[in-house]
Image 1 (cartoon, each protein chain N blue to C red):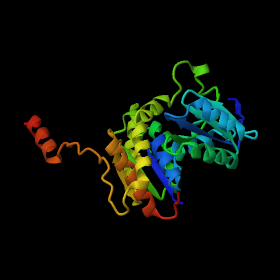
Image 2 (cartoon, rainbow over the protein chains, first blue to last red):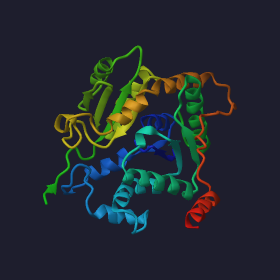
Image 3 (cartoon, chains in turn orange, purple):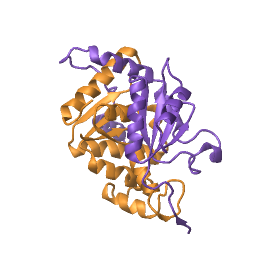
Image 4 (cartoon, one colour):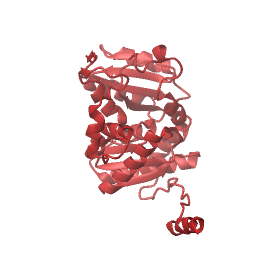
Length: 149
Length: 152
């Protein structure tokens, strides 16, 4: 079973398919869960404290805005555990503020820089594309080994 | 600064989405309640949220998936159901994250078709998925030429 980073990190489709084909999807929810289940200082809604942009320095330089570094404190630990990645490009719902946009760019850059197997896709818009989309993910995950479905 | 004491520590929450012509969220909820054994099940408009220790949640999810393999989809959730920081009862309007679900549920029928077609697919046939659009980027030489034309 490989740890597979998914992007967009909240994707239902990718999370389901990776788990269905016997691997572990690394989605944002895992890290959010860990943060909100850790006691500390109350900082709603996501329990992001001033410490988190400091943690983000592991993945982003000090001159990078704190909004990006704070977000990287969520995604960075997942990235470190990733053994493979599936990226769906141009996902409309991953559109957000400038902090989100820059974090998304940094994330995809770091994934490619890490040198792990990456599958690049677009969301399907027809039934035929859906069939190929699922088959491509299945083939990619099979090539990682250790899965099973 | 107030001290933060988390609730439901050690639990996991998973969303179960159902987009099936043969099963509704309430059908799914009834089947989940039958085997819940103390696990928290919350019925929603799109399916369920299941909260409990990881082993129990996985057991329930595995059973629910078997009811309609190609039309039931599962993903992790960070917050437990009803958390005041996320619940729309406290915030008003759609819950953060809802728009992502709305977008993907619109495409999920294509994924269901893909899952249904998978067993009939000949082994060794290379998949040709929709590949990223090659959007033309501004060439560095062209950018340089633009800058120079402005400076002169």
